[in-house]
Amino acid sequence: MASNRPKAEAVLQVENDRVIITEWRFAPGAETGWHKHGYDYIVVPGMKGSLLLETTEGENIAELDAGQSYFRPAGVEHNVVNANDHAFSFVEIELK
Image (cartoon, rainbow, N blue to C red; front, side, top):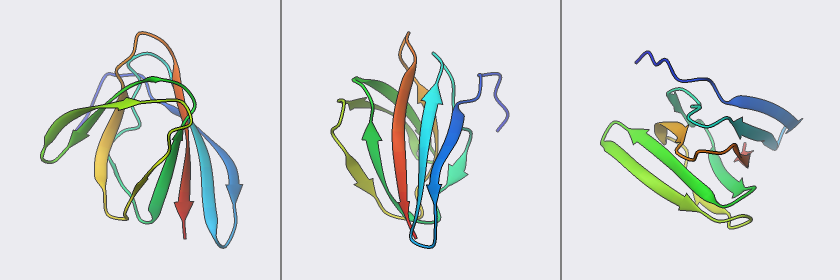
């Protein structure tokens, strides 16, 4: 699914035989693009804000708080969009 939205910036922080740690930086309205997670993962929001989660089952708004982590299993398929009028970031920790 093609989109005219700006792309989020993925900044790789650590990759080894056990984890991949990436900081995701979003301008207002930016998106990750559709992807499927190959590993279990943890997200650690860097700030309070809202993300639009586009999935094959529909759309959902996630309200996130700074430092309030959450876990998702491998296999999640979605596009993540910054629904805020300000920049947003989170750290994603994938467990190999």
